[in-house]
Image (cartoon, rainbow over all chains, first blue to last red; front, side, top):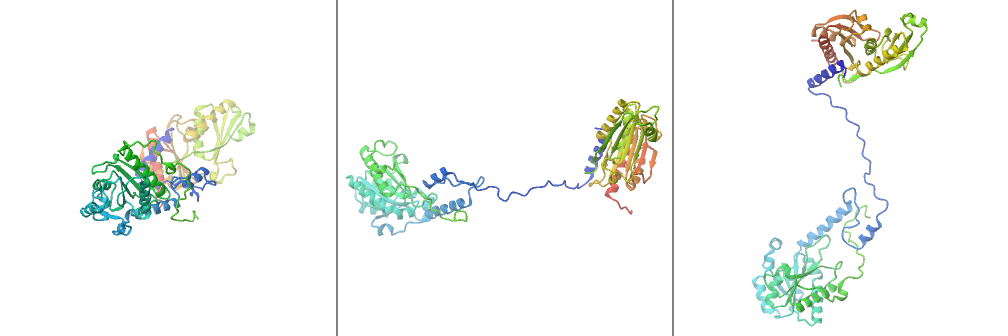
Length: 304
Length: 219
């Protein structure tokens, strides 16, 4: 740099340092953002459309930039609300008696306690235990138990249908079936104490399953051979998603009866149970599955 | 930003290898010694005087003509007129070409005005020449090789700045150009050793900036 330029650069630095508040540098011109940053694709993916027609899973829902579209978010929240409502619903005290079932009750005293104390939901209270010993048939092959579980909505919805179909399927196969009963505030392991008390070879508890998005009406069935307190989940076989969009109760009852039969044949259940070669017939569910529309709980301008 | 450089623009450069003797005489050249001319127009006059002097240090050329235009480049007679016409003369074209190269290099990389306020509406030329060439030394009545501070600013700023410069270091005023000059600026040439000239130029520039910030001072 030339002599004078170096001298002036030093003076410039000195003057700038002396200035207590130099004027701000001019801001670069910021262009206005475009009115629509994420244009809607002109054509939806045909694969996504076809896939979305066949499942209620969240596929083919598109995206807006890196996020969900508004109607998808609203639908998600609405389905979550359905699940919350299902968890919050209680089985009425007298529901079992009204439907001709032997009423049982776990040691849980309130719904809140039911959610917070799974251990209490796995044991019968004293009156139920006495009632069970007094009124239930003993020494049966299969003891079906209907229960509320985490979704009383499901229990009241298709619970009776599943119980009746299951009982009929078992009797048709020549097994003796125990007294129909319904347990309130019940967890899966309650079947151990009930089955042990009535001396059943197989205990099958049919109860509302933990609600998922938009499915507050799903039932699960847990089967255990030689039930007694202390059985673990490794000793159980289960079937989930028993509802109209999954396995309908009629079909599920047939599969459960086949499963219970296998337990009686092999005299075991859970991990050691050999499921190969079970004759499920049309209850195998491997055939055609009709398209399933996702139930739209909300509507927006975009979805109309 | 204050004291940012305002680099001069060379608007036109032309060569006259064999100029007419009448022209040579009219522009102050000596036909017996000078045959070739180099002409430049620039939009800043004082950097050009310094650059013309620089040319005499690098080539066997004489500065035969250098005059500022009235009211400066903002009121030029044409797009290529700028603020000054400078003419160097030599015995042959090679000398003139070497002189022109030194002149343009000086304008591009050394001598320039500086902004004395944020908007650049006040400018200052606080230039230090470390070693005078034959042209400015003759103009200033100094010896070749001496240092000189070449100070230019608008009239008010210049007057305050010159006082500050003269008091800042042991310098002597070789020449003072009171306003108005052709371009309506005012100027001064201060003589002293290099350090004194530098101190004078810095004091001058700082004073000009200060006047720009505080035009009114009634005590």
